[in-house]
Length: 284
Image 1 (spheres, rainbow, N blue to C red):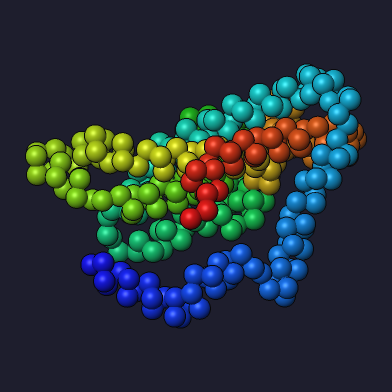
Image 2 (image 1 turned 135 degrees about the vertical axis):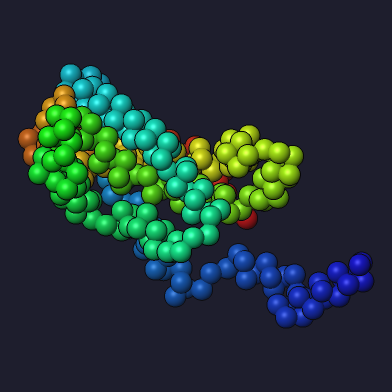
């Protein structure tokens, strides 16, 4: 084993020019790649830096303590949390189905689940109106039979946010399930556990980190949702006006308030990245 390892190391050194050559390859960067890389970095970070530079720091406390801001922030937090809860209840079983059950058309189902990731949010809002609106495919029956109207309500905000956020949770949990060893579930089954018991007592603890990461991503996506929300739920202060909608409205009348609200959302995004740093921000 020692001689084989040494032989592999010698072969690698021969191909790459030795350890010194490998270190040079890892530490150096050719100019044709370095220049566009720096341009891309500046392109992504300059708007954020400009937001910090132009922020009205002196008047920030007054702007952030206004009743309108707190109203929008409270509504955003409540709706994003509710949308994440909805995503967990129906998204985790859906991820398990995609990862563990082989059925015809599974690829099509996975494509439909991930479609909201690439679908323009406004189109998603229109689709929700066509499905759940007062004259929608399902909405008209909800209105006729139960008197339930979803558009332009706080519940409509939750539905719109869950629609665009749940795919993040499903993808994260499905990937974690595929990486988890199914032999633990098989061992539980041989001991007499039902499939649901094995999922509840064995699988869930194994995939808990993936569920947590997916829930955080879904919550952050729901908090920042704009297009589907304004299309399906409208922009009514105190009822459907979330933080992104408040930023859009303030940008037209009070740019300083818009910057202050944007900084709040930026801080939340940074906090999410900090919470997921062990999963995505560590170098191998």
